[in-house]
Image (tube, rainbow, N blue to C red; front, side, top):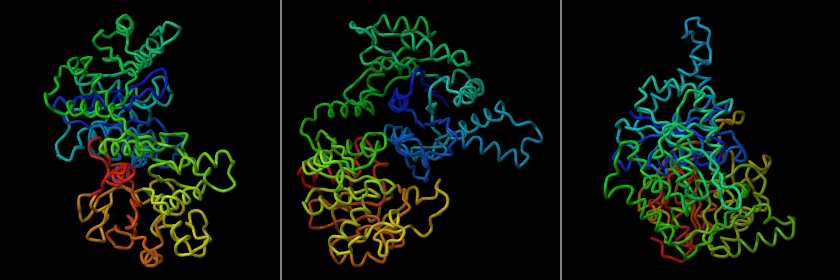
Amino acid sequence: MRYIVVSGGVLSGLGKGVTASSIGVLMKACGLKVTSIKIDPYLNSDAGTMSPFEHGEVFVLDDGGEVDLDLGNYERFLDISLERDNNLTTGKVYSKVIEAERRGDYLGKTVQVVPHITDAVQDWIEDVAHRSSDGSGTSPDVCIIELGGTVGDIESAPYVEALRQFQFRVGRENVTFVHVSLVPVMGPVGEQKTKPTQHTVKELMGLGITPDLLVCRSSAPLHEETRAKLAAFCHVAPTAVFSTHDVPNIYHVPLMLEEQGLCATLGLSVQDGGLLDDWRRMAHHLDKLTEEVRIAMVGKYTDLSDAYLSVIKALQHAAMAANRRLVIDWLEAEHLEPGSEPAAHDEAWAMLKGADGVLVPGGFGARGVEGKILAAEHARTNNVPYLGICLGLQVATIGFARNVLGMEGTTSTEFDEDCPNPAVIFMPEISTTHLGGTMRLGSRPTLFQVDDCRIRRLYGGAASVDERHRHRFEVNPDLIERLEAAGLTFVGKDETGQRCEILEIADHPYFVAVQYHPEFKSRPGRASPPFLGLVLAASGQPLP
């Protein structure tokens, strides 16, 4: 087993996740089996209770793990399926150690950060690194470990120490340390500054880890003199300094690293005619797309694209498959509502009416929900292609119940617990007192209820599909018969035949909503069917 540890310095947001994923792509291109681990140094047990403002979207895995969004990068880039244990948090480690102490496993010893926490981290990494993530059942050859945060953070210190020790546990020759840093460009002549990287490498070396490779983010390719200076002051060879400068799309990053000789530096060679050739074609294909498709994204975190990262990626994958350049118009749902600030209200409605398609993604809470209902109703009544995800299915149902069934004032019990005739209700098996890990989570089967419908054809005619869920509320089962009689057909349900998973309106260009989150399984080159249907319909192309 080879381990590649990716750390970051200077500041957050440099793209450690994309760098780690890109290195994983290169390892796969060399014929190796790859898995990934993300270390998050926060005390939360997982990302499930975090606000998108704190940490971006919560990515959901097949086993129901609510994890950091970087695991989504790993899955998309490497086409693997990870488990909740592939996301290591301080909360998980401390809980494991404290449980062991309570059982008496430490035989009366004083339990300390070193060695007990650091040993637990190393044991966790070794265990998870050997688990198959590609469905083959065989152990991976390489594990990419990303250390979240920035070197020097107090909360990261136990992990840095654990990784320092880990290199001797598994053999220094089996660990490659990759440090991602920033090379800012200053002044009128665009001078590339190396001092921030020098300082962060000095900090890392002071903690006992010497980086083998430097990956430097900058707005432009590193100059040779910059590369030589970094090598001289950071104790690496010039061939071990890599530039990850701005590129048209992120699929160029693995190509960029390989062009600079990363695989050769690690003593590996890329297989001809394989994965990297596919990536090259994909990256250049995306660059050449000119004909636009415009999708209105109606949400409440529209100033924070990381809150919808997987949805954005799934739209991009679908647009690539449809040979269109994606343009997303971000609409703050509240601005669609009556009584909002007039200029913002007019602008939001103009954007909605000018869109080729409408997407209402998942979300929680009452803020902006009336705007989302209005967006779904606009799409339904004006024959605009629509895709609703999770809450997007629920608001589509609420709008239909109000305006077609005449159920004035109906809503979800999430927004009005005392609603006398709700269209959406709290699922009976879900905890009302604990938030973490208590939703309907993970991969679940959805069974098609009809022999033929648009969304089933998009899924290739399969009798059922497995997609990932994350929700507490569902369409009121007592209302389904009336909704279907009026034309809102629930073409997919869970294995009990009671819980509604997919709705569709037959006499509409594309009005589809799903209770699950198909964005989590979308991949470059294998677009998610509900997203592909939206983009095809929005761009006027025929659907299956």
